[in-house]
Every structure is written in structure tokens, then in C-alpha cells.
Amino acid sequence: MASTIYVDKVDPASGTALELGSSGDTLTVPSGATLAIASGGTLANSGTATGVGGNNTPSFKATCSGTTTVANDANVKIAFDTEVWDTDSAFDTSNYRFTVPAGEGGKYFFIASMEINITSATTSMRPMIWKNGATVIRSMGYVSYYDSKSTSGVVNLSAGDYIEAYLYQNAGGSQAVQTSVTDTFFIGYKLIGV
Image 1 (tube, rainbow, N blue to C red):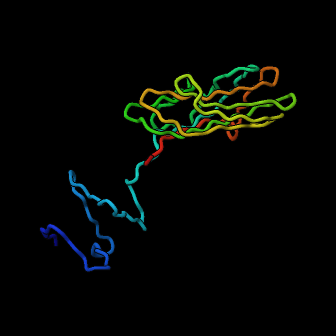
Image 2: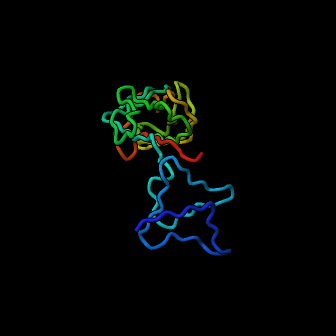
Image 3: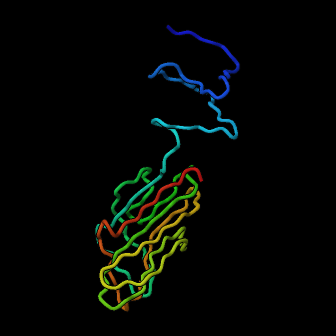
């Protein structure tokens, strides 16, 4: 049996919780209505939350189907040409870049990892993340023989901005970025709540 009660305020006794009837009942907020949590209030969840809290999209992960040759003492864009996932079709495998879709500006987290097979002594390797053609995140380290380095960080982006992964090395000759999916990858996703 359905019935309607019209009230302006429900105020449970001090120190008690307002409960929603029996197990399995549902409280529905109709379309166009707002369920407001007042300043200083807390929305607590000890059950299952669905459809709330947002998600970290757009997001992508890309890997390399072939090697990218990185010339000595040069910044070279890595050919991340294979998508593992791409929630918003925002990663372009032909120019190896992520472009922020319309309406999706905000803060994003990126990580780029690359493995190279250095055949000489210890050398400098600098993975980088570029925004609109300029470095915004860079890590530096020394490697020898098979080794991988990564760089990561948060970048504030607007719709239309693009992100690419680059690598610098100075082994004295050209080096190849390996295709290992565990060591060579490019990941990005939008942060929520920041």
C-alpha cells in the first residue's frame, strides 16, 4: 500500500538515527529534486555506493607495438601506438598524444615509463611528459644495460590541450625503446575532487 505524508521537517529524537523502514526499502529523490548535505554535515556510507562520487575519466593506457629509436643527446617522442584502453577516444595512436576532450578540463595524473637496452656504460636517461609541445614533468636517472625509468605527476589541463611522452638519453649513440608492456607504457586519467 502506497501513501504520501507531507511534512516540512523530520526531526529524530536527540542521539538517534533516522532509519528508512525495513531492509530492502528504497528512498528515491525524484528528478529535479536535490538531496542537500548542509555545511558541516557528513554523508557516510557503510554499504555499497553506486552512481555517486564520479569516476576518473577520461583515462587511457597506451603501449608500443614497435621500438622507437632515440638519438643521442636528443628529446624524442615515443611512439605509443597501441591502446590498452581509452575511455573517451582521446588518445591518438597516429601522433601518440592524448588531447583533452571538450568539457573535460581539470587536473590529470600521468605516468610514462620507458625501457631501453643500453649497450655502453652508465648513461643518463630522462623520461618526460610534454604539454602542448613543452616539458612539464621530467625525471632524471642513470641506467646501464636493460633498465627502465618512469616519470609521473599532475598537470592542470584545459579542453584542447595535448600531452605526449618523450625520452632523452646520452649513451653516445642511438638507443631503442623496448616494446615491453610491463616496462614501456603511458597512462593518464582525470582526477576528481581536486
